Image (cartoon, rainbow, N blue to C red; front, top):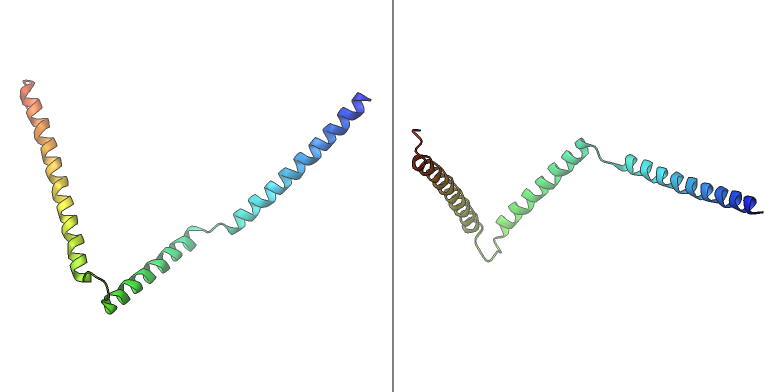
Length: 109
């Protein structure tokens, strides 16, 4: 009696397991079919980029922003220049410290 019950439980377990694996394989196959390739992704990025430029052009034409677009762009440009300047100064300071440490250690470099 116990052997039959164990056998029936094992068959039920194998049946359920195979059902879940079959469904999992079907879902994975479905995902693989719907996966976009690199060409589709690049095309979508180009499309979104062109649409973004079109929106920016329309905003420039409207001129309804609280800050002038040209003023905003010049502010962003000046911020980028300031960041680049700070980065260069930081790199120079690090090099100076490195040179100073070498001289203090008695190096002849």
